[in-house]
Image (cartoon, rainbow, N blue to C red; front, top):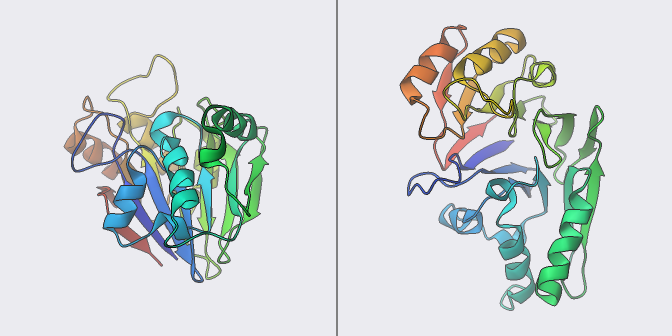
Length: 254
């Protein structure tokens, strides 16, 4: 399984880092995970035509994680040189269907395909859930401490290689459980200190989760400018787990 970091940044404009976006590839299938503004262009830079994607998974409905959904469906609809003839499945937390229906209410036919459908499978926000993704990857989820239908996501290949993505979250016992023993934990580290809304992690929060879960490797993403990357890395590395800051285009493979 290949897990590509398509976007490791935030909504703050950064030429080197796009908003959250990831790509899971296995068994000849490719599934987009999240996708903030500019994701389909960053996919193209990696040699991936977004019109050929086999599905999408969304950690939650905030714009920096799903802002490219409308451009994605638009390019699938108008790409006459490579027309799509198969459904596009999406997995996301409860509420995503209403969210999508609202987008259709705004954009109408421009994001409604002809001859195929966008099929949305909602995952519970009340406990554990999951699905079998195209290509044989298993998705398992637990609710995150955030809003907009937020979930933690775990992707497991048939050979057992497992990548867990925090999504956006405050301190979360569920994330520690889901990430226990994972090969890689890709986690947000969005704030420098305590978050008054309890909806994002600071370096010490991440370290506490890592100490409890003991993944084999940690990759930090989604650092807002207030976060000192070197200090964040030092705090998390103190757990003894190898930790790095993710880069756009970086591939995690196993």
